[in-house]
Amino acid sequence: MTSCRPLGGLRRRLIRGGRWLGCDRNPLRRTVDRAETAIRLTILVLILTVVPAAAVLAGRWADDAALSQAQQQNAATHVVSARLLDAAPTVGAPDPYAGAEVAWVPAHWTAPDGRARSGDVLAPVGAKKGSTVSTYVDASGNFTDPPPGRGEVVGNVFMTVTLVGLSLLAILLAAEAVSHQLLERRRLKAWDTEWQVVAPRWTGRHRT
Image (cartoon, rainbow, N blue to C red; front, side):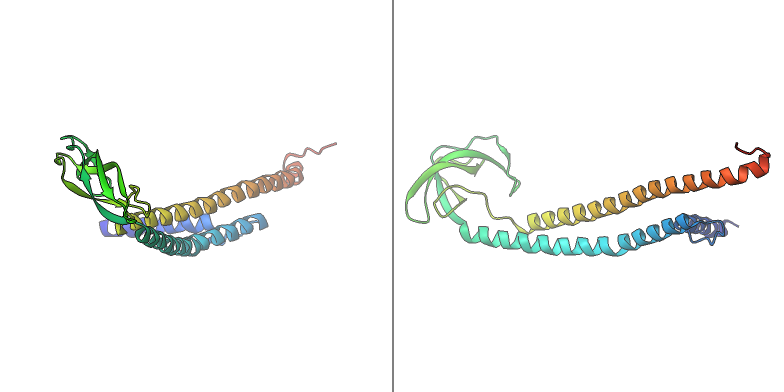
């Protein structure tokens, strides 16, 4: 007996789903009911086809855009050795790119064009004065962030795919809810009109 319960529960869920979609062949369904059935089926098909397809296309576009941007930044970014002018403090903050603790320390370095530059760079905590650290600079020799890595690109693509998929899903569900409200008003209005015709026959009262 227990083995039949899951099948019975599945059957009941399928029946409820069929009724929600309007696929139960109810002879009392009106034109407005059939219209709502068509809308729900259309939205269901769109959810199962358009939403995944749009998410895939958005992911490909985001991946191509992110890789192109990374290549451009990589071409415009240079790695130089900066010599620390002071010792780095023993306490810092986690490096968003490497994960190790770093701190801002004054340093000087040679720009790609050969000019001497100075400024604050990120150095590991506890680094000694006079030691060198590798840092990223632009073509003018100014300190800049490193180009995005593959992990950052994948994260951006994932966020794009998620936002596109959830946005389209929300739009379709909202469209279904709005159409249901509009059709429900037409349904109630039709019922009221029919009741005005049928009620006098049942109650024996006629409007004057």
